Length: 73
Image 1 (cartoon, rainbow, N blue to C red):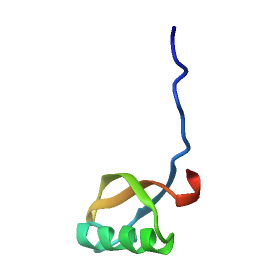
Image 2: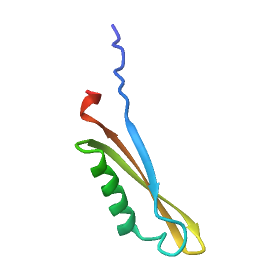
Image 3: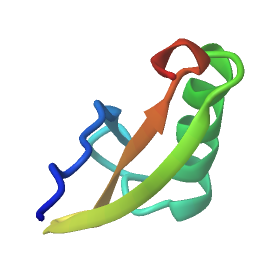
């Protein structure tokens, strides 16, 4: 007998530093992500993925946060 895989919805948002000088600041990006997470209230963060692409100002940092809200069950 095989079982049916369980599934759930994961919410997410992506955010980056502003383009231009300072776009390479990892501390600034982490503060931005943390501030956005706090705006949602109590959430369960499942994963955070950090990315970057090279620009003339250095690496342009961005992040995607995957999370669940309490009402998501």
